Image (cartoon, rainbow, N blue to C red; front, side, top):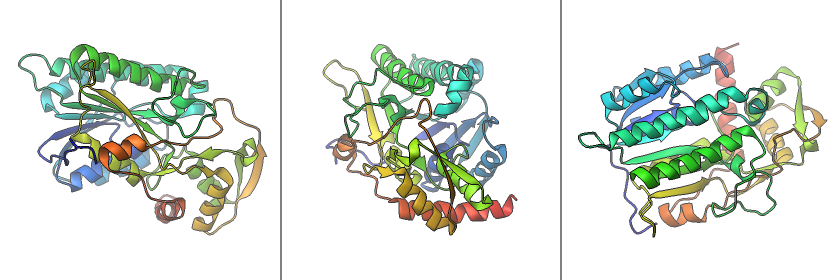
Length: 343
């Protein structure tokens, strides 16, 4: 555990963007259960089934320490007002247009949300720190393992060069890291980037492979397996992601030798799994075998992801621990119940 590590301070007010999203929902629920006051922001867009987002939101609204505001981070004036009205102590920006393949066909929405929208979050944090304002003490923001591209060196370290993203989605996430560093350097905003590695679990995103596999397996339809199944992913259960973020909330980066308070961390399971092994485990959890269709590599896809989490362990005494048998078991149980209610 880092010498300066502080336990989460429940008196801090947390603002979460993308709060009706997969990770945002799980993080908000954990913080609400822990007694934090949480303000959630989401635009509830139709990139995937809005009913799933609304179900997540309905669960969060049961907590009396939760405030939800429907807004898009690309709407600058709305974001400014949310910050001025709610005076958050800590901001967790999870709002973004997700998906590697979707970014190849629909680049506009990635620029609007991931670049312009994130700029508005940075600006709101900057203005909060002006005289007479309520300064944001720590900005945490979602990046992605996609920034590593197709590099051959493993595991992926935060010290590695990430200058060759192979999808626009990855390029926007690398851009977020650069933008956050600049704002941290110029305006003194403590900022932490979170490189998430292939997150899965209950209430997950329907556009993710494991969710789509489950849909097709249960319908008796073939699943599409790219690169003949020769792919590796550092699958990370959502509760492990949330635990890592919670430990960081009250621990903004200390100043480095240049006085900057900026840091990036990998949050991954540190155990890459071959895609075919993941599929076999999912089949077992669902109790049904998949019909398999093997295809070549998809544009924008990477061969493997593998997180070096040495710094996560060193600074926060934490390493993810949920294996795919346990994690997919929990997902499958949730999925069957959810589908039973939404046939």
